Image (cartoon, rainbow, N blue to C red; front, side, top):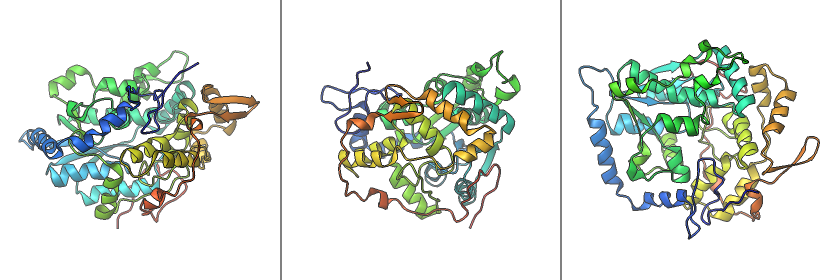
Length: 410
């Protein structure tokens, strides 16, 4: 029987897959590190950022000062706003095509390229290989997002090595923001180890090759992280802006809506209209698999963020989580068509990966959810958080994957 504790301030527990500690006062490591947002001298920290980036300013040997990984959602606009308009750097944008693109995401990516007047390289891996890897990781790891996370974290480093552009600038370090894995003052940088252990579930591209599987060298080579010797020779490093800027994703995205017409999107399984608007599956199948395995979904991450910023109370957070986490996914057929698999197959997978600590089988395909939110009593919420999220949805939204596309700009 697992034993665990909940933080008394937020709704995370010691079962968090990233690893989370709770002190003798009942406060989790994530909440403790979040307090640094109110105590650190962010003006001083921004000067540290400028000192770093100024040393990489355009030289005669390079056409670009840095690399910025981007998507059509999440933090790309704010990151590029800081890099281009505040730090005055000339970045090369890189983007991995996840193939589950929404028209909102394509429009955002197009808008980003135009508004910031930046060059971009997009990696379009052979879709047949992508489907083969997705099917492999789905049935062996319970993840449809492995190739996306692998591509998004390897492609920027590959380009940094190829074009000898040593500085990569990322947005926020997820481990810091969620569980307080490091202090902001530690200035932790992107690493092969963190990528493998937390982004890729401990599996590198070569680990996917198996004599009894259909995956071949030609399928996985583009997901390989560059060799350490080459990285060291070129001096590649990846810094996170949230170590130097007081990171507040909601406020930042709302600024991007105002300044650059960043497009939002409504989801069935969360109140957040800004996060991962570029993907049909992140807040759907990917999120449902997270609920099956870990007993909580993305809405819990988003709620805890809002609790820590004081925009909602802990009890209001419970209400929101219970409202959304068991809602149905509405784009399953798109994924089944894309993967050319039957619904029975994926439903079988769903049942196989359900964690018995959070899911009790009652009869045949009937299950009772006993996830982390079941330990809290739902209270009536009068919170207006959901209404506070701006609605700036793309007028081009279509219910189909946009496989390739330059998007729309107006």
